[in-house]
Length: 476
Image (cartoon, rainbow, N blue to C red; front, side, top):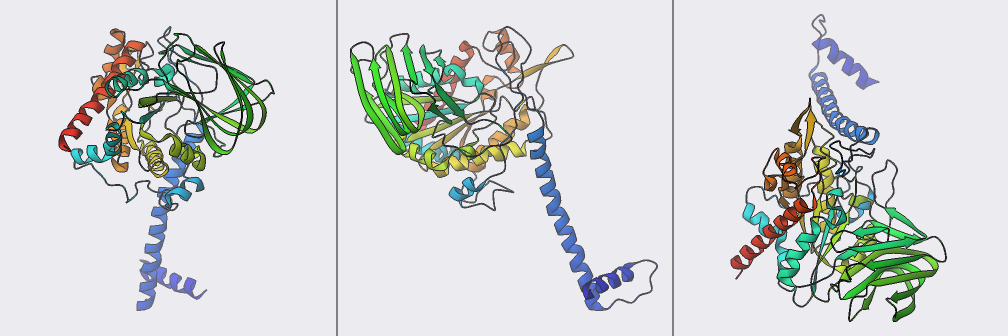
């Protein structure tokens, strides 16, 4: 009550119509209160702005561009924009629970904006070190992306370039779901499996997605999977089953190879099967499943390069805060990826905003968690490709791509990742219009054709190998 009286006296003292004489300690109290209110108002305005952006992200529709070669129109899905505020799962493994709300740029990560050479060396140093050992070990690259990489597009030509240079064979990861790999002509047919995949949704909880953002559970006793190698390709040495839990497995390969065993592991496990010659058909039957989770399969070499193709249709970023950290870390320790490639942004472009600070923070959050979960991994962030739309009957590039590219570049710089400006490599603003005319991009002016995907994948691979050669010269 006394404080309120002193505040009232201060108000009278500063009132133009008052003759009240203010004592010195009342003046001091008045200014303390005014400064405190100003400080609280400023902080609350930042909070309201941030929350309003994320609230808008939850309840507004975001465009998800789907490839449609038969139409010049863009098909859309209703999904959500960027992932939620950091949760305890992130704070547990970063140790920065209070910092992440305002900024995900941690002091432990160096800003390389002033020195591109230093940036390049630090960002890819771990990966380049592993490349030197590819003749004696498996060097794994995991390529995450949106629908731009579906069907092994972009990833396949990159894989080819690296395997030609460093050896290795196989297509790496394949999910345990109805899936067709357009590049290598592999097909998977599933029966009686339930699928869980990381995706945008307003209500979510962290789940046991492993390293690849997917898990599959048998829902009947006769659950089975068939894998057809339609090209009779001989391009892998080891077939690996990624799982956790308990189930009986019967594995048939072609007509004259059969193996039965019990899979039983309370944590993530990898069961490997070595073939003298890659079979044309694999059949897997699962019985007696008990809390069994199948994460997918690997078609790997004994040594050299393998590149995993992991698309998430509709995603704007990886959303690593939705992955169960323990299973991600355990799978990472076993598979030891050397390079993580993040290729997102296609679904962000149609959502035109004043700024993309929230998107930048979502990307930074993913990269920071990747570096925490996989301490020896290098991260490459591929920028969004050029996109165009029809305005009053005229094709125009989207006006917000500059801002999105800037957000992606800053996210990479602030977290010690390497940034590859794909739009610039395409030819800059409006380049996609020419790419469609040349048959390199589809008529939705967003997705690449197989020919365009080939150029993009080779371009990324060539850039990495050029930097690797420079790295070798500098560290001779």
